[in-house]
Image (cartoon, rainbow, N blue to C red; front, side, top):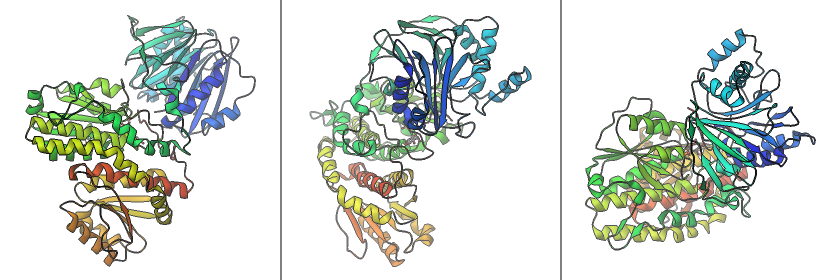
Length: 607
Ligand code: G6P
């Protein structure tokens, strides 16, 4: 993944680049660096650690009005100063920042080394800068040298390049890793994400794969890699700079947990149809007849997007009675999947950039399948690769750990399930039951949020344990999986989720006073079964924290978090929220880095 940013204009580049990098830190944060073009020389500063460490290391006299910056998530070579970007050519003329993976880096490195090039890092990215220098030495312009280098490369990239001999120009290019341009007043920006530039401009140009742009203060020109000019229309970014502030919260995570009622309202906005008790989803691009023709649904995503997809698949199966199943996109894409014309494939992604999910979509498209996207980021690569879809409109999610986009994804699936249900056999009465339950969700979430103090106290208690078990049955199981995911990502406490029904087939051996269990127990038709699972855990002296609708016999659970009831099919949407708050406070109790957990990145744009 990694984040790149570039500036060319009249202002000092370094502070703008540092600010942009801070906004991209969610993409990776193990090392960072800057290069600015001064009066025909290149100044470079790079550092292991966070953007704040880099900012502290940038010398006062680091002047230049053209520059590039990078925040890294290590793939090739450990995080250290040498492996941090930008990478610089031997004579110090060119600097490159790169997001993505160069698959033939070893071959290119060997060839360049045989020609006498000395490498200073272990990264795959460094080959790019040397290739550009070689091309330039052969007499090519910067733009053509970049093109010549990229034509030798196999892999993915979003890059930005500066040349000490050409102050005032940045060349950027994209293949598989996002690059956007920001158009300012006599200044231009480029970045991996709108987040880096939205403080300065909301006029955005999205580069497509295989495109390159030559960017100057006064404007930009876009081309394909084989030098054909392309015309790009700017669009206005939906997000505003304020979306990237913590708005008085201690962390983005807390802000985003608390934003869920309003985020869900946006997901629902204009989509519920009272007259026919259904959902209108204009972006699906499917007629009722086409929607009826699908015999199966396959949902694909990674991490929390996959768990949200599991809830989504259950919703579709329950409400529309279409067999539906979720699978990690990262597995699906590697197993030569059978693609069927009567299966609907739904790709789930907050960022719309996750490489494994995108690769799954490409594979399905190539084999002639129909793909829909459930995506938060408007205009993102996955959204554009699908033939239709549903945007979450959750607003930018900055904290690496997904909360509001997870919940909004489950709500978007409820809309899809309702829509498909109503073109199949879901009765108008059941449709009404679901639409009114959806409308009631924001208030119910407010009520869960009011319980934060109680949940925080429990989290402090449970954070003393080294490991926690999470269990749930059918509707409760994906919610339990996501609960465990939240806890491990945020607090680094080991957490494992199991179907409650499977506990006695193995993991019960682990249960005892040292291993507490968080049990997701909605008051549905499986309540009695779930309560007997709690009995099995209590019989082994395991402590139980139950999340559900009614407090059980105190012998079955020492601790209880109560959640307002919804309609049974929609219960998983609400059951996950206390576990987000629980994980947040467990991580606070342990002093963890809340918005940037170790080793993770929000957007994984590499394989
Ligand atoms: C990374 C993040 C997860 C996220 C997953 C999918 O692994 O750390 O929090 O759920 O990517 O991201 P996406 O943007 O596709 O939803």
